[in-house]
Image (cartoon, rainbow, N blue to C red; front, side):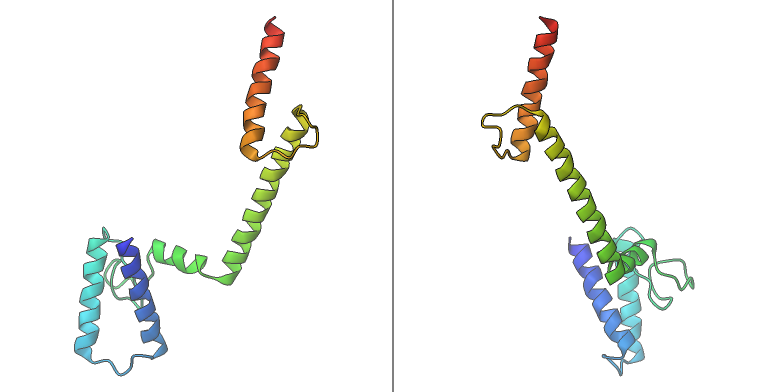
Length: 136
């Protein structure tokens, strides 16, 4: 968790640098930042953040690491909206499956609202009962 917090704070710092919010920065300051990035990269198993060709990856590569590309892609509004839509569809399908299972289970009173765990437990008991009836 600490590495994630460090990476996030460095990302915020880097984005502020890119926007020019921290200008002017001296060359010695830039060198310290590069050293700090390299140290973080080594501490994270060689998977550091690479921005503007500095830090983490192969020397002079100028690309973002796979983790950083994934992190940036997931931060976009389009990705979050698509993820929320997929999650909503998944939950609706999950709830529909429980509703269909609920229709197959006998309960007294018939209109009693059961929780998901109650539905699962009742289904287990009902299957065991039907199995017992078949064996008898």
